[in-house]
Image (tube, rainbow, N blue to C red; front, side, top):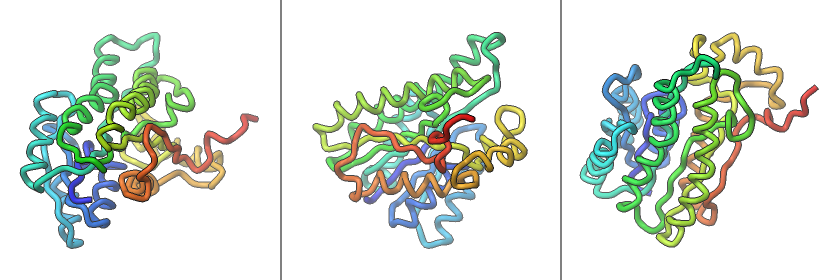
Length: 251
């Protein structure tokens, strides 16, 4: 594998994936966007300090031309594109009875349509043997999440997208799979307003069979496996990374 584009690469699972890919010898395009509160340059610096190769690329998944430009910039920088991690996502706490059309469309536009824009832009340049991994979630794809219907609907929709895209990309020799992270200590989940925050994560830990919340690197390692030749016969699938949380029988 030569070159990987990671959207939402400046923080959380995206950052861990960018670092893991670089550690595996890949050149990494760290996707960011104007207004990103996290610093993609810091991720690039971390990768370069470890001897890897990376650059920050404007990859706004809300924009079709923007994603086309991000893919083209990656190809120009690295001479090709071998893999994509469609990881960018947002959320907002908005109970259904007060959810606005604007909030619904804003979240779905990033979390579902943004993945489609990413894969659609990358597919024409990915070679036979190329791979795509989409970041879904146990929220929506496996369980519900109170106050987060647009997020959950988007993450559930990604499974249908991945299965169908696998049928179209398979004959081209391109694989596509999804990961379903559980409770992961990322900036998104640590947000005390729109997610569980530190206290919520602390309450979750005892309910998880492995006894802890996940770390971004726990997900990044699985993403790297799915991108690698070790997963060469895996496509159209989703892999849950939740420490056993969704295996728990409610009591």
